[in-house]
Each structure stands twice: as structure tokens, then as C-alpha cells.
Length: 498
Image 1: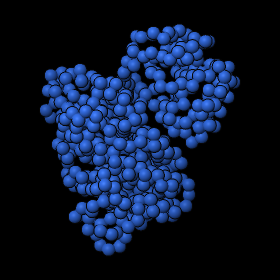
Image 2: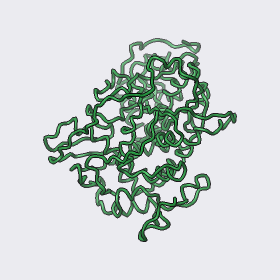
Image 3: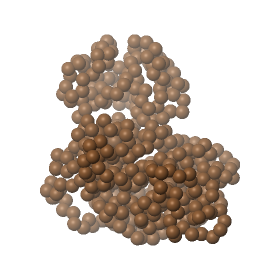
């Protein structure tokens, strides 16, 4: 809970205020061919399943010429069973709600799923792998003059973002800054955010996908790593189809005209967050530079483990080694869920080589793709093993409060009593929204405070909130940089937007 230093102010209605191609086949240290999908190997698991045809994505259903295998569980180079059928058959052998995937043959690491999609990785006593020789070696960026960016030639920059509003909004600020330096900026994201992007003065391209459905899945399966329930309830098939659509639309966003004005656009460079998954493949196919950017740490480091991993240690291995290897293991698990979909996109749409798991895991690090983290170094200091191609530059803010005109009912509520508490959970999708709404209202009553509650995407019961009494206000879409000046405290989920 963050306490406002400006609590008590009274508002008024007029208040104003570079991607390089690689053919590297380097194998991850200790990489195993064993897969947690029983019945076929890890490398085989990246071949596409047989699916019903979709005329919008024809390349997904035409097997490439090299996918020739012996007879068996395959038909014309693809699986007879769908992803869901194959995984359900596999999961049946796990026999528990939190399946233990067994020890990793090369690393002596046991990986287990939790109900919330997080991973626990237990590093055994035999784990004695040193950090790789390239760990911490400075990257020499050829052809970059760090003092001359202001004189860079005008470019068409395609910013590709998958996620919630909190993921999209920082890149509106970045896009505006790039435009101020003479570049043409297209922000390619979900249709839901078209107005938000256009109002910011940027070009827009719809990459498809439902961010609400995607965020709901990612809450249950952070990083799109499939948890146990998702492997049995049909989630995986739906999300793979959504990812396939996003991959295709991200590629089209690099060269198709604007879908509203038909204005020509051909990307000279790509900026992307990791969940698009299309970034490095589009950059490789088109031969254009790539910059990755995110609102949470995603690059391997010995300083702390991957954000989605609980590291369990059984032995004397130093924590920094366990931290470093957690990133590669998450990369591997993510590839298990999406590798086949991405390989279909690479080989059939882009004409790029097939990627084995050993080639795909760590590909971004081996290519030394530059990163920019839009988070504060005061919150996450840059680790010493993140070299000069990885930057932590601070948050990207829009001044949304400047021209905002609050609605009359919100002004009346703020002026009716002491500064309230703000409660909101943004894009977090809740398992039991009514139960949480009850708990919130009970806590407000017990504390004897006034409150503003934002239902958000989580589905907090708006009727219950509005019926709670005059001390509670149900909030719509309001800029936080304006609202937070008039509240006494903030209770939130810790998302990038907050």
C-alpha cells in the first residue's frame, strides 16, 4: 500500500495541469532430449499437430517438404491427434494435481507445476554446472554511435506489443518520443487499444488476439507455460490458435498498409515485448534491426531467478548459478508449449529454418539482441552481468492528467469527505470475483474508510460495489496520475501501469 504525499487536495472539474541472423546450433549445457510430454521426444514435440483448416492462416495446415518421417503416430509429417488430445493422454500419466516432471537428465533439476502456473525448480546435490564461458562478456555493438542518435535518419518503427493496457501504455510514450525525433511510428497491438493508440497520435495496426482472454490464460499460466489444468481443459489448443494469429498479424504489421487509412508502411526496425513471440523471427526474415523491451526482468542473470520461478536448493550449489540457469529452463518450458506453432510460422510462412529446442532456447542471448527495460533502476538495479546491450532506463510515462476532465459524480464523491483509499487490480483475472468483492467491502467497513474501487478486468462485482453505500465509489477508466493526487492510499496488484 502506497501512501500519497498529497492526500487531502480538493479537485475541480476544470483541473488541468538490431537483430542479427544466426545459424547457431549451440546446445544448452546439460540439455536433455527427454520431454515432459510422454510418448515423444522433446525435439519431436515441436512438429505441428494436424488441425482443421483456417483460410486466414493456410500455411499452418500445409506440411513443409522436409517434414517426412517414418510411419507411426504421424500422418503426412504431422500428428494425427490434436495438441489437446496428445497432452491429455500425457497428463493422465502424471497422476497428481501438481505434476512432478521428473529430473532433467543433464542438470539434475526437477521441475514441478503449481496450480497458478508458476514453476518450482529443485536443483539437486549433483548439480555442479559452472556458468558458461560467455557469461558476463561485454558485447561489442558494431556500427552504433552512442552519441549520435539525435541525428539518426528518419525510420519507420514498428512497435509490437501483446498484453494489457499496462503493457501498451508505456510504449505510447516511447512512440511519441520517437515521433518527436522525426520517425514514423506504428504501434501494433490488440484491436481493443485502437482508440488509445490513435488518441496518442500514433499509427495503429491490429495484430488480433483477445487481451482479456490472453491475460486470463497468463494469470493461470504465467509466460504462456501450460499448467496442469490448462493441459486438460482445452486451454492449450485455444491459446496456440491465438498465438498463431498474433504471429501472422505481427508479420503483416511490418509491411501492410494501415488498416484504417490505407497509408503505406514498411518497417525499418522492430521494437517488441517478449510475449509477441514473432519479434526475432520477423526481424530475421526481413533483415531489419530488433530491440526487445519489457516491464519486468527477462534476461538471464545470476543476481536473481526468473520472475516465474521458485528456486529450491538441495545441496551446496551457489545461488547465483541456480538463478542463472532458471532462465534457460523457463525458456525451454515455454518452447515446449509453443515450439510447434512457432516452427510452423518460421518454416511455412517466413521460409526460415526449423528450430530444434536446443537451437531455440537461448537464441536471443546468443544473438546479443539489445534490450531496454522500462522500469526504474531504483526498483530493479541493473545486474552487473547485464552488459552494454541491456539497459534499464526508467518508466515511460504519459502526462494523461494534463487534459483530463473528470466526471461530475467522481468530483462530488472526492469532495464529500476525507480522501478515500483506491483499490484496483487492473488486468488481473480473478478466480472468485464475488468472493473478493465481499472481502474488500468487509475490509472497508471494518476500517471505517471511504474507498474508490476499480472493477477492472478481474470482474469485481460492480453492482455490489455500487450498492455498498455512499462511502464507496465504483470507478471507470480514469488516469491514475490524476486520481492518485486525491486519495490517501493505493491498494493495487503491482502491474506495470500502476
